Image 1 (spheres, chains in turn yellow, blue, cyan, red):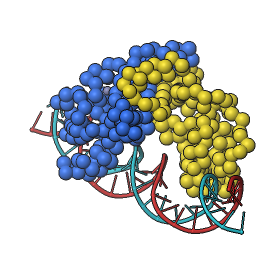
Image 2 (spheres, protein in one colour):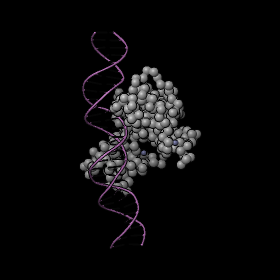
Image 3 (cartoon, chains in turn brown, blue, red, yellow):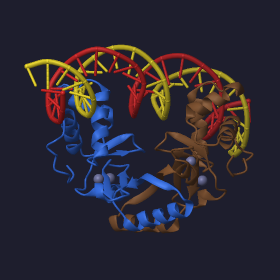
Image 4 (cartoon, helix red, strand yellow):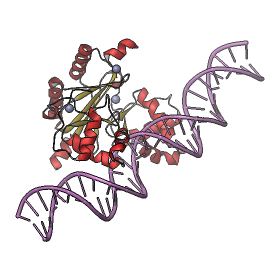
Length: 137
Length: 137
DNA sequence: CTCAATACGTTATAGCATAACATCGCCGCA
DNA sequence: TGCGGCGATGTTATGCTATAACGTATTGAG
Ligand SMILES: [Zn+2]
Ligand SMILES: [Zn+2]
Ligand SMILES: [Zn+2]
Ligand SMILES: [Zn+2]
């Protein structure tokens, strides 16, 4: 399990369950993956998972990976204070590495400023092979 | 209609139709949007559209926007020779601005090198408001 | 207590994408 | 000319992802 936030105590039951599932997973999970893991805990419908995910993502405790239609627990205690977050996703083992880069963020800010574009959020996802999987290939 | 590639002459009928639909659209289209536009031309099934899109994306004539599950025609005659491409997507009017940034690409390359990560492709999508829509708000 | 806000549960439906299989047309080659 | 491979096509069925719409339950402020 990846290094991650402590689980906040003010989560609702469903939010706690969903975050727990993400925290205990080695890689990203789709909403339906999560649902399957939590049927034993009484969850029955996709909406229960999606609603919890919405809140978790909103609070920065989880992130959505657009190119996978899947979710991961945030791996960085403080990432919600940063702006742009990037994800490197290994096609081999499925592991996700989360990082931030101030230079990229600044560069993007410059572009936006020049264009008059008001940035609300940015997704950056790198697909490829992690070192282990690249060497194994 | 955005500035775009000339339509290559070696496209198949379906590929030509799909690229035409994208070229004539003001904004991104989902595969099903495209299908609806092309029913009059004899297309009937999603797969016909998806197969054409696969080829167009492979050749760099179209791009997939992961955060929208939609597609746009490439707006840059030479983008397939560049590496990373970024898209700024306006939540107001739906227009998409495609651009490349060598500094960001280099920075990403540095990160990958340091980590031993072998990059295969990168998606970068900025959501927000274009200048026009931001001022109108 | 009462009201408003938020979470929850459930069913149904919408939207996105691919599996599987048959067919067709083109081109290189015996 | 006729065979055989290959890529594009057509069609049906299916699976995965996400939200609409409705009602109930819980909580907390005034
Ligand atoms: Zn994070
Ligand atoms: Zn790996
Ligand atoms: Zn392009
Ligand atoms: Zn706009």
